[in-house]
Length: 493
Image (cartoon, rainbow, N blue to C red; front, side, top):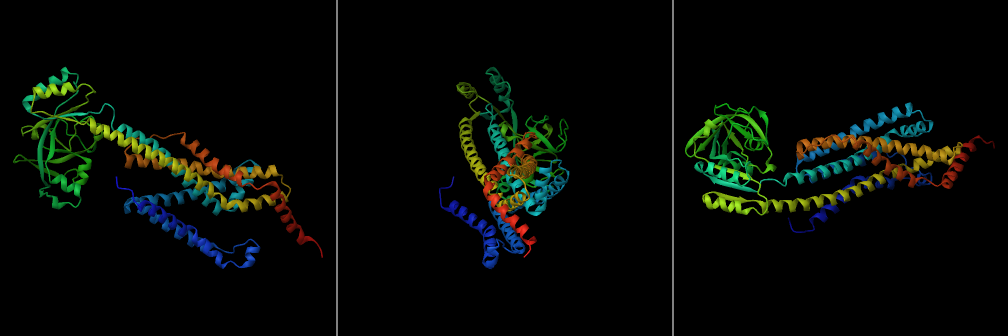
């Protein structure tokens, strides 16, 4: 880990200043051009153009921060595109839903509340959109937190192999296998290793200078561990082409990550140099390997007739419970040339690191959840004056305080439920994409996420609305002023 420094603090301060510059300063600059009479009348004039410019500057700065946080342009563009898509889709759904609900809701109070949302459809859609995206982020963090922790815990299962035996010679295979069976390790299968260097792809010589990335240079600059078998290993999955099976023709099955790194695809011919002898074959299958199983796996597999006559050693792995180290000591005494590698300390260190990372993720989730709730809570404050004015109009026309509260409650429930529904569906969709293409986890559709999203949307919206609900006396005073304004023009004299 890097040593503590002031750089994270400077990053946080810079981020806060950039966001303030993008979203707070432009509207404040507008106040310098407000005539005094507008202040007396509680009017700000036509701020549409300035507001759009302010939002545009804020969005551009926010997109820049996302790209910087992602660390690379491609990932940053994906995140920015996801936010932009969410804004467009959520905004369209919000407008359509408000328009339809205002016309088809049977309840009179509900119809009036939704009609109120429709009258300011632009602001309502923007508010629902913002709430939906904020809730979607929170639900997505909750989903990925749980599945991420579960995946990390399962990445090194308790019964993962912790002992490796290498340098087993051909004439020792039968004796080593029998010894392991006698000591309860019947599943410890031996796999051949043939050391070979990749020298050509499609007839073109291969050297580290052909590649730009460091990992590709390292791979082609050393010998590969080749192996041969007729059965697809249990923790391997063919993702391209067909497994060769018992076909004896020279051919290659390559691991997918290696294929991407060295730019090899199906149909390409790979040539290896093994102890001065050249072996080549076309790539007929691409495999996805579960390296977390800690079982013996290989980047390149070939049919036995292709390389079984070449010099080879054998390797195996198995799980040895604590307190049975005597098994390894007896094996080494019997076969001194065999090398035993105990990775138990490594696995223990990995588990300790994962536990620390899990604790950090859980703290980050709690902190983000608290910050997100505050942001969602504050997002509803900009409509308070409008709701107070509408409440005063209703009171002026004879509505009771109970009726006004019922209309506002219906409005809050509609905004929160619609935002939560879109957030839940969006989080489920994005979570599936992340699980499939980034984390490589399996996430099933969670039917409880939809009601959870609706409740999560309704609680802060309803709570904010009740806290901001004006006192009956304030509404009555405003209603008296409104009624006077309505009646005064009709008086004579």
